View 1: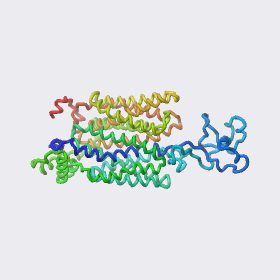
View 2: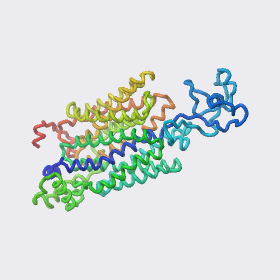
View 3: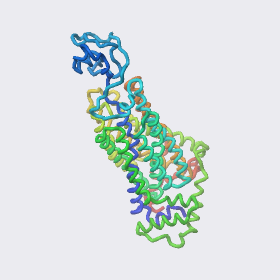
View 4: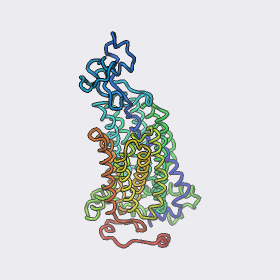
Length: 537
C-alpha cells in the first residue's frame, strides 16, 4: 500500500488541507515583498551635483537656485541637469547667452549630490551615494540577495529531508525575520549586503517547505490546483508590495514593514502539521499516525482502522524509503535522464531570467513605478487562472513553449516600438509580464510530471537551483543598458525565445501516467490514459 491510499481514506482534499494552505498564506505573501523589494529600496531618484559649497560670496550668492544650476551644471538634451558632472568653475556667461557649453571644462561632482525627495524620503542610493560610478551597486544588492536564495535552495533542500518540513520551516521564519529586521538597521553598504544575503537564504526555506508541505498532504488529483492556488498568494503579496512602497517612502521602514508579517507566521506555525509522508519515510510511525488521525478527525472521516495501524504504516515506510536511495548524480547517469536534466535546466533558466528581467524593470512606460508594479502583479492572477485551464486543453508542452515564445515576442515589439507610443509599450509590457508568469506557473507542474518518482525531489531541487542562477543574473543584465540602452531587452528576449524552442524538445505529460523509475524514462512506454481509466485507477 502507498501513502496515496491512506490519503484517500482520510480525504486527500478536505478542510485539513485547506487549513494548511491558509496557514501558509502569510509567509508566501512575504516572499514577493522581499524578492522584488529592490525595485523600491534601490531606486535612484533624480539627482545632481551639490553646488552649495561654491563661491559663497559675490555674484553667485545673489543668483536664484535655477540660475545657480545653469552656471554650475551642464544639461542633457531634454534640459535636465546632468547627474554626475559639473563645470570646473561657474560659467556666468551662460546666463546672458545660449552659447554652446560642450567645450567648457567639466569635472566629476566634488561635494556629493542633491537628491529629489519628492518620491522617496530615502533609498539605498541616497543613503550611501550609490550613483554615477557607483550606481551598479544598487543592482548588485539584488544579485547578492538572490545569491543567498540560491545557496538556501541547496541547504534547505537537504535540511528539509533530514530534519523535517515543520522544524525547518520554523528555522526559516526566524532566520528571515531576524536578518530582515537587522538589514533595516545596517549602517554600511557591506553590512547591508551581507544581511540581505542571509535574508534571502532564510526566505528560501519558506519557499521550499511551504510548497512541499502543501503538496505532500494533498491527493494526486488536486496537486495542480493546489499549485495554482498557492501561487496566488505570491500575486497578492506582489500587489501589496506596491501599496506598501507607495505609503512608506523610507527604505528602512519599508523593509521592516514587509518583514513584520513573519511574526504572525511564527505564531501560526504551531498549528501546521508535519508531513506524514516524511515521518513515515524516517521511521516515525507513531507521530505519523497522530497526524493522520488528526487529519481524519478534521475532515470528518473515521480514524484509520486497526488493519491500517502501525504494521501497515511500517510497510508504507519501506516503500517510501525505496525512493531515498537516489541522489543528484542519478539525474546524469543515463542518456535520456541527462537529456531531460539538460533541457529542463535550460527552460527553468529561461523562465526565471525572463520573469525577473521584466519584473525588475518597471520604468520607461509612461506610468509611475507604483502603478506599473501593481499592474504587473495584478496581471498575474488572470494569467495563472488561464494557464490552469489551458494546461488540460492544449497540453503542458505547447503551453510552456507558447507562453515563453509569446513573452519573447512582446519584448521584441517593445524593442522596436517608438518611445512616444508609451500606451502601446505599456500594454505590450503588461501582456508580456502576464505571459511570463504563466510560463512560471506551467513549469512547476510540468517539471513535477517529467521527473520519475524516485528522483522527483532531486529534479525539483536541481531545477530550483538553476532558476536561482537565472534570477541572480537578471539584475546584472539590466546594468548593460549603459553599454546599449536596449541590450538588456535583447538578451531577455533571446533567452525567452530560445528556452521556448527548447520546450518543444520535452515530452508531453498530459494524460500520461507519471514515470515511477528511471527505467520509465529510458524505456518509455505508451502510457496515455483516458479520463475514465484515470478515475478508475
